[in-house]
Image 1 (tube, one colour):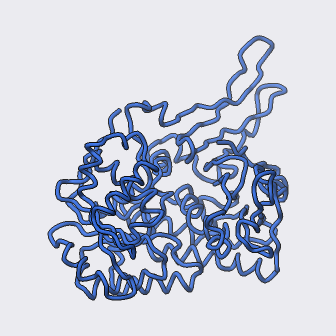
Image 2 (cartoon, one colour; image 1 turned 45 degrees about the horizontal axis):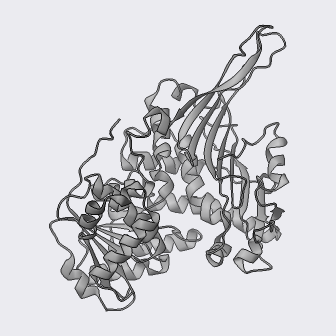
Length: 483
């Protein structure tokens, strides 16, 4: 199956922080793939802007090296790479001063789509926004992309929203969460709202509970200073896991449009119940045979920051009343895996003597292998009576759609192209961000007031033992973490 390419208009994309790790690792290699796919019209340009003293040729050489390091098979297309690099320019710029802004103003055209990607620290958002307007570079039709973290609490998120709103309309602001660009996350909406099979069962009459797991095998080495000020709650739960929870739990929107979808997500966040202290487990990975402990990685021997968190929450509405949602995420875990699991209720009565009713389980795999499977009950083959077993109906995208015939687009590629198209559906709105922090802040304040100390756990495990007990007390168990 060949993916249908939706054209975009000619654009100027300015990447502030264009020499940074995110630009080199994700943004530019992703845009190269979109270029080869025919989604960069003739005349489109990408302009890197940063403090480094580079000219166009030096920047193009830097990005060529990044494509070699982080690109896929497409990096072997030498002619394509040469044509792509010719679209790249560079401006040395001072985000807090005056240097470079007049040079940038001369490069930006008025008759094309204008997008400005703030791949910088949030403390610079206001400076960049102010100077884009002061030098008359941005227009009422320009689009601004801002990276997480969008604040570290409700107060700072409100301040950032206010800063951006001083210069840009909400319709111009694209708060990016790359999890929402994943193919499977979008397929979650297709499965829910495009199939009569699931939506009638998507409620507390048929669903026993829902699990959301984002497990990573890496530690925090290399970003320990940042992570130690954030922790798993701020770094993962408040944004990534919150977005997945919203998509799995929201009501069907009236249409698949930006504000219609985001209105329903906002309702979910506002319906989340406060979390009881005994429904939270925080953990911190210990040292392994050949790995450092969290405190060593963070260079803080007295750190109480969590590298793992598990929690149980409920949504106070008609659809989900009584259905627990279990969330967990952690570093240095057994495998790299992101999965949403919907566990349906068992049948109230089994007609097969001696055989228990087995629940149907829908698993949505976000990484590493994107796809879905549905556990159904069948008879075990062979003589000897009616023995029931649970088997998966598997739909791994690469297998079902043909690994060699379909391109599974990287999340950043899709989201950047959505910015160029002016489609905000997969981006967070300001009130949504603030609502998420309004729910998160009391949880953090609670464990700080109690002086809670994270439980240590072994690297390569599934987290602290207390996290297992969180479900065991309810007569349930976590899904196995496997890559």
